[in-house]
Image 1: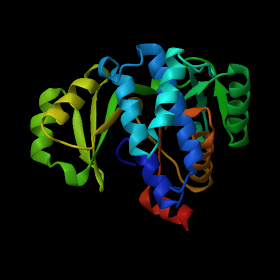
Image 2: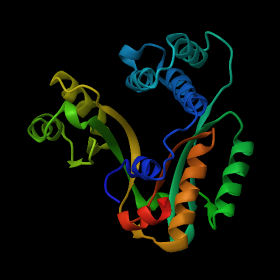
Image 3: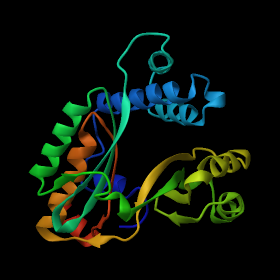
Length: 249
């Protein structure tokens, strides 16, 4: 599995891209609220909030909904108070998982995440159970039609990106965690539209899985990702295209 948006590719191949808009909006609202609470309600001085707003608008979220989420974060209006959580666990064949979430009830969420792992031949571990197998990186996606390899070399790599890959319909750019905003700004100033980026985790090495273990690991990712309190799921397993085709059939 190549690139850091492999889960999107897997979902596409399995025909699972038609997620309910309500679930997407729930996750976007949480990110808007937490970003505003942590860095203030002015997107001009809060890069995380600016990215969250761009992401929300890109998913057709109404401006009123965005503004209410920001105001909840700044305390201008009442609402649930979310906190960020990170869960570490293992799945079939020794696969490792990091699960980023936002919750207003830690006890409820951890119990539900633990149950999901257990139903998929996995185990929710403590701090350090899986984090050692991943590096925190800046992850950027750019629509393929919006730039070319020469621009990526000049703008992205010139601003500190580590590498870029051709992922079919998009370019994927990896940066050091502290260079994400710098590279995004360089792309924007260079006239590259549609670049979206966030901090995430990349596995240091990948485990090849197949057969029943591949199916269970894939279902674990999808079930975790479908949980309302989960923002992102990262795993260290790899599935061949042939195996994906078999599972998708």
